[in-house]
Image 1: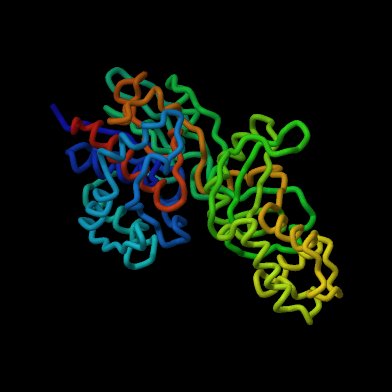
Image 2: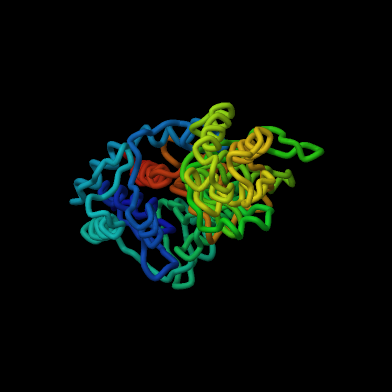
Length: 415
């Protein structure tokens, strides 16, 4: 009996890991990639520095239709395994408080190492090749593409999601999975900026500041409803709304609620390190120190000037007033705005701005240990095509490595 032959659709992080693992186990492997080169999306990860993984690996770092699904696969191929794997490929990594990067600081280092390993294993890579249909063909699979038909004993779908389509993730893999009987949870943008209502955003565009972002549904009369999610970090204010890591971390919940036709409100706390009463005391102290100055600069020692001016205007504090004469009522109004600026979220940014998607192939129909379809023997999944999304910080790449390894190992009989 000859060696098993496998087809992998998608040459991203998960597809390359699956291919390398399967080839190391003795399989002949063909990667079908519709882009001119494999691994383009890897180059954009970690702002071009490639945050390979995170040593603080917890279940709550992943969102999925079945809660324990991601960590089952990650338990098989851990963050430590990822570090060891890349070290064997010649990549030295650095640990920045649990965030793991290549020591070179270049994502290209990671991609080059994967490509060189694939070449040394004689993995066949067919680029600019768009899969069109997939069929079970006797005991294997037949994939018809824009450049001919390919046959294999097993098939791994690692075609990505709909996020960042310029890198190759155009959602085409969902149709292939559906044609084989798999249900698709509606894909929506995640790890993405949020558009908000309010003309004032233009006046504070470009400002970065520490803040806490909390998302709520809106009640019947516009009041705060249920808390959806909250996160803290560097908030970036744009001309259309909010961005930055804390926004990315909670954005999937806005996408989901808005898709259900719910109104979504974002509460922005621009001084999360202080409680309400502590902030009020700080403003009273500021009034004392700046008593002989005009109020136009009252908050400039605390916030970016653009943000300070916005708070003063919204609190009804005129620039020509003397700071020492500001009433407690006005200070309380300013403190309330600083701690609780409420804006309506109108939309998540589009797929082309998203780092990942929520949704994808329903994981209920996939074995979490092997990544094999429960519906079609010999069919495996890996990476973003599945209904698994992680928070920022290397978690989505770890999912790619773990699921790719599980698929590649299982497809070749290594349990």
